[in-house]
Structure formats: C-alpha cells, structure tokens
Length: 474
Image 1 (cartoon, rainbow, N blue to C red):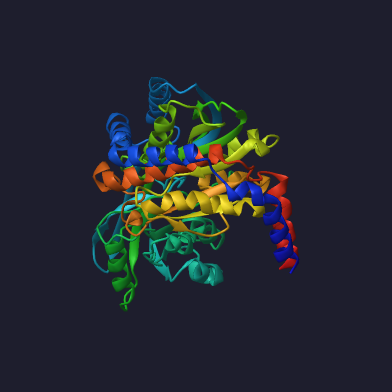
Image 2: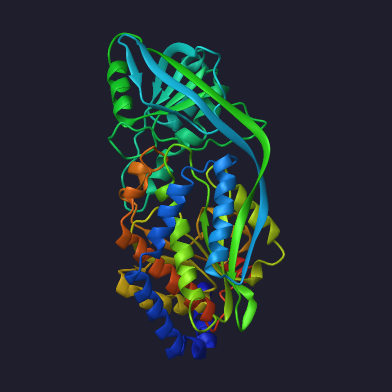
C-alpha cells in the first residue's frame, strides 16, 4: 500500500509535466529522425566499413588500436562537437594453436575454439579419460574422485529464445566451469559451445578471470561435435580425448573508450549516453557483436547532429573498450563517473546484434514513468511495445547500476543471434539492413526525446532510495 500511495503522490506532483510531456516541435523532430533513419543506409555503411577495414578486434591486439583510430576519425569526420578518448587498462590474451581429438574408442577431430584466458597445455597436449556432466551444477555436486585426473566435458545445450534468456542459463559452464573443475583435480575442460547453431562452428567466449584463480586449459566444441562425444560416452567403453592449447596471457595493456558528443543547447551538463563496444572476439569480423551496435548508435547520433537545432541536453556516443574480456571499458567509465552520475539523464547500450527491437524497458524514478510511456508511443510505429520497469542499460553500463544510473533497454529479437555469436560466422552478411535501420531509428528517437524531456529521470540517490523503499514494502 505504501508503494501505491507513493507512486500516486508522485504522479500527482508530476501531472503538469506529463500532461504535455513533449512539445509538438520536439515530437515532429522525433518523427523526422525516425523516418530519416528508416530511409537511409548510413548505419549499414558504418558496420561494413568497420568489419572490412579493421575486421576482428580482440582487446589488446593491433586491430584494437586501429579500431580506436578508426572511431576517432569517423567521429571527427561526422562533425561532432567534441571527440575524445579515455583510457582503460586490462590484461590481454592471445590465441594460438587449439586442437581437440577423440583418441578412443574411435578417432575424431573436433571443431574447437579455446576459451578466453585459457592457459596453454604442455606441448603435445593433455590426453585423459573423459568424465561427462549434464551442466555446471552437476559438476559442482560431483565428488573429487569422479573428476581428478580426468578431462571434464559439460554437455548442457543452450535453449533458443527471443530474449536470449537461454544464454544466461547455460553460460555458467563457460564462465566458471574451468575453476570448478580445477578445484576438483581435473586436467582440462571441454564444453559444448554456448550457442544455438547446429552448424559445425565452435563458439568462444570469456571465462571469469582473476590472477588469484588457477584456470585449466579450456575449449568449446561445436554442437555437432558435442553430440558425437555424447554418443560415444553413452557406450560401454571409456572415452579418451586429447586437448592442446597454445595461448598467452599478457598483463596491463591500455586501450581507449572513444567518445563523441553533441553538446546540449540548454542544459549541456545533463547527458543522454548511447553505448556499444568497439572490441570483438578474434575469430569472426565482429559484425553482429558488436559492429552492429557501433553502427546503430553512431548513425542515431549522426542524424541528430545534422539537425538544424540542438538538443536541450548533451547526447554522447561511447564506444567501450574490452567488453568481451571483462567489461573493462565499462568499469573504467563507471569509476570515473562515481561523483557525477546524477548528470546522466539516461543511458542505453546496443549490444545484441541487429535483430529488430520489439520492446522498451526502463529504470527511472517512479513519477516519470509516464514519460517513458510517451517515448514508447513514438516508437510504436516501429513495432516497439512497452516493457518492464527495470533495465540495466546494457553490459557496459551495468557497472553503474549500483550508482543508480537511469537506464533504458531496447530489447532486440535474439532468436538467431546465438547462431553466430562468438564464432567465425559473425560476419557482415548476417546483418539485415532494414533491421539495422529500425534500430537506428529507435535509438535516434530515444536519444532525442530523452534529451528534450521536461523531467529528470532520477539517476543517483533518487532511484536508489525508491528501490530501497520498494524492497522494504515488498
């Protein structure tokens, strides 16, 4: 009841603001931006250029540095008011040889990718009997005697969903499986790829890395190869495999977060921030992850930059460093904003490929939720419905969640995203230009109306206090 009364009181106080949320002129501009994005192909040109000129952009690699130079030049050429970089320092990892073979009872070479921060095996690899577990929980529950001196295989298969929820349920095998297996005396880890494709592509990805935690040599094998291994494990004979990894971890590389800003004409100290990450894994060209996001938010901001009028608040584009290997760019950004998070009107990241957006969710103070509803009404012609009153803003903005940052999630259709995610098949042809344009249109409308809204969305202690009250009343 306390929660209901508080919300009702807030809405009464905000009544004059939400009754006429946006001016007719602001709405006309939003619709112009939406239509221009749908009619244009600027976003597709951006991701095509990034993936063709630079290609895969593993954090800490030479291509990473070239991508930073590419982004700075792109922003400068587009004429943004301010373009700058901020450092992010992190450990790096380099892939070498990787090989997984079934040795007995039959010989098969398996399509393999080493997992991020996997250590190297001894030269010639590690050969041992395989022990199979249904999922990470089964491995965690196993006795050490079942695991010691064996190679662990975790067989859980990712479920295909529109929201990508299947990824969250399956990814623990990749992120912490090596640590758990090592604690129980295993020699190496093999996982079924965390992906939904039945093609013979392995999916790489990050393991939770800490200098105080010892990881095992760890690889992912393709779904068809995992099926093959399961069939052999169902037989009566022991199965032996050999895993070989050549990889190197290097400490303390410094890359850059890249920023571009349209400086606000009314309250320039207030900021709407759009994010994507510039790095990618090293096996594809990083088109859907996250070249698409780079293109979407950059094109959205470019359209606003070319208007005849300025937004009231500043609009920033942030291309984050080293997301794939541990959100290092996002963490650096968040740490640098601890004392100024109240300046951030809204944050939103595009990092889920180029599938069409179907819903908008937001984390804002209670009294201004009707403003989110008003924004959604302008997105409705794009097929975007109203979502939840909860949002993180995306992976790179998530480190600021504890600071109370106001955030928006534009939910994309991820039904096919994990067919290509972290594989050699993450290439430009997987992006549909029309869907990419729909994304750019949505982010342009969001950024413009967020900058023009006659309310503050509540970043900082306002949101945190309301969430504490909500938890207490529940």
